Image (cartoon, rainbow, N blue to C red; front, top):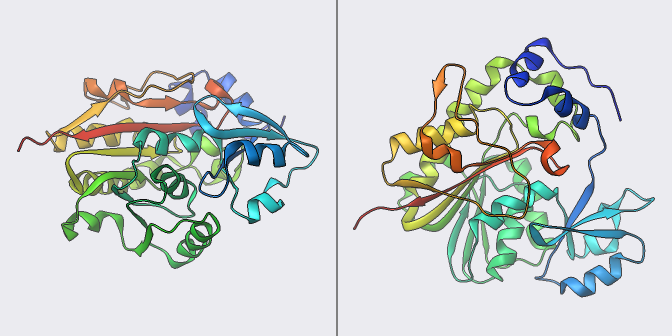
Length: 309
């Protein structure tokens, strides 16, 4: 356990959102390593047998392919199984958005902010390499990692594109499902990235939220009738989470939020913050604090396009 230094304004803000003593304590604790077995390459049982020679595997309740891994070693990413694409080193909470998206073989799906590829490769896995996955990001350096991971995992139904996410709606292309795993402040990832605390400032959320609102509107407008949008962040800031979903629901009357049923502990959605109340439907969003399931903090919302023909 490590004692972290929190800025006074951070303490003031987060004391309004959660039990800060519990939150600050777990932020200084070791984050369990976890992997997702890539069934495009090998069956779960076969990969488990290989890994269990050196690692203790504990199933992640909400993801059949996910396992926490323990060993005297820490370098699960340096194993042969990783190099061969049999596993993807992925945080347990990060596996949730593709599960909620529920991709099906043969569909056309957009991962708007795909790099470095953890969720894109998980989506392709559930698609069984059938259909079309558009894996997009906007910087060349991030696309390099995305391309390597897609190749390593044996994915052959993905198209990699480079463009700003908010421009997708202008293309007129319609998708069955869209994942907007938006760039964010990352305050749910403090356990593995302490620098998040150093760069955090109250103004950054307003700037990020403005971008996130453009992305989520573009993602929704890129859906076919009856399509599904999943919006997610590894942020715990209401402006980046419930506030963005509130914006979408107010701007698009055909956007209907849906509940999320997974085998995990969750916390209530934030129904208003800093003088702004959110629409009642926001209560169906999934908010996870690090202390809920001993993971990163995460936020996920599932929205359907219920356009009437």
